[in-house]
Length: 138
Image (cartoon, rainbow, N blue to C red; front, side):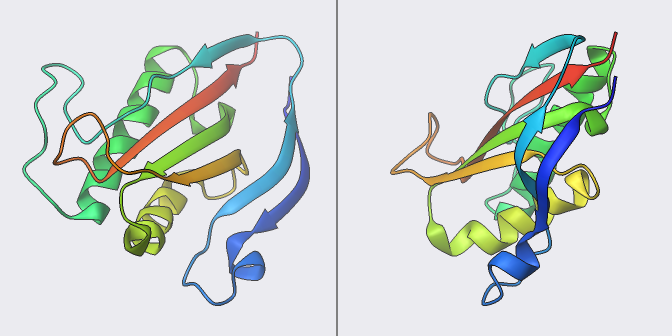
């Protein structure tokens, strides 16, 4: 089973005023397989829920995306099975840094993406949270 990515695009074309390079699409069609719904991932360790020691949006996003990658792999898949992400940031000024970093993990994948700027996340030190959905082929 291959996911069908509808209307692929790169954010360098849709947001030329921003320094972004993310492969996304408008829709993803899946058939069969198992769907994995990921809890919103934050900049903390999966094993002990300890926050990383950084207030840098790039470092926090790396940890979040590493968690997403690890969880998908633990479910039997890989990042190519990621079909949707929802990105929550607490400061719009971090948008480019967060999306550039996330883009390193989704290059060539083209998931659907929604981004939100929120007042706060569950812990005051968190600058970014990303949840995802993956569909792993049978």
